[in-house]
Amino acid sequence: MRLLNKHVIITGGSSGLGFATAQRMLARGASVSLIARNRIRLVEAAERLQPLVNRAGQRIEIATADVRVRNDVSQAIADLIQRAGPCDVLIAAAGSIQAGAFQHLDEQIFHDLMELNYFGTLHAIRAVVPHMQSRRVGTLVAVSSVAGFVGSLGYSAYTPTKFAIRGLMEVLRQELKAYNITSSVVYPSDVPMPVTQSNNGDGNGNNQPQPNPDRLAQAIVRGILKRRFIITADAQSSWVVRVGNFGSPLLNRFFARPLKRSQPQPKPHEDNTPPTGLV
Image (cartoon, rainbow, N blue to C red; front, top):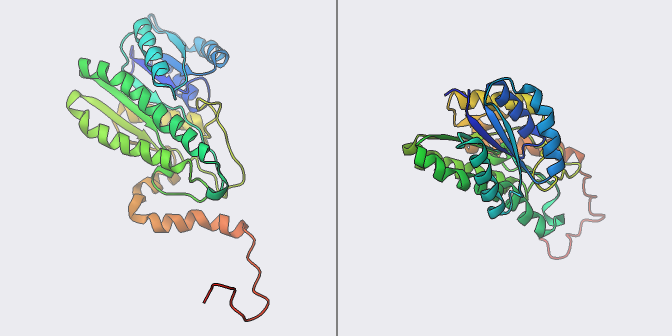
């Protein structure tokens, strides 16, 4: 596959991984359309990308939408397709992360992260797939995480959203293959250890942590060109993906070790009498 003269739509495209990927796509001769919730950031991003436009017909478009709202996303993508042509590549990069012990997290956080990370991805995909099916060509890229392969202590709200993205893309890989639609999943190593703080996005995923957005963007471009299903950019995420569920007990012990060392040890019981209710 070549990216020259292709139309690439990127959610969460005003900063972070989405913006870095837009830079790489423009350098390959593609036109890019950015979707995010913050109009000011979108305008600023487009202005920063403009110097990279160096081919006739190459363009940068923006559309404001909250990816959590299906109608917002559908309308934004329809407008972008009308302005810049059919979507050849969709990169669903919008997402956010929040850490915290399970029992200390408000239940609304679980709903919010699923709405943003999973349904935000789903809404964008559902908006472009009918167009790709009718043209019998297209590429779908969704950003999961190493947390989509193994649960990490302190990320009980975040991890299920990334498992869901991984599962969705594995199904679409099979269902859409007959339409010549390629599906890819990106696995950044974006879960820090041990858990020390929460990281919140701006509501459309522009603060999703990435160790090196440009390096990951390079991996995404390379993965698209080579039609890879699994896209990784570093040794750690590549190792986790390869070990996967077969090694989840070992991975859980590896991820838990730094956190256990940082937790205070319980004080021993003062006498030899077992605590009430324990035998």
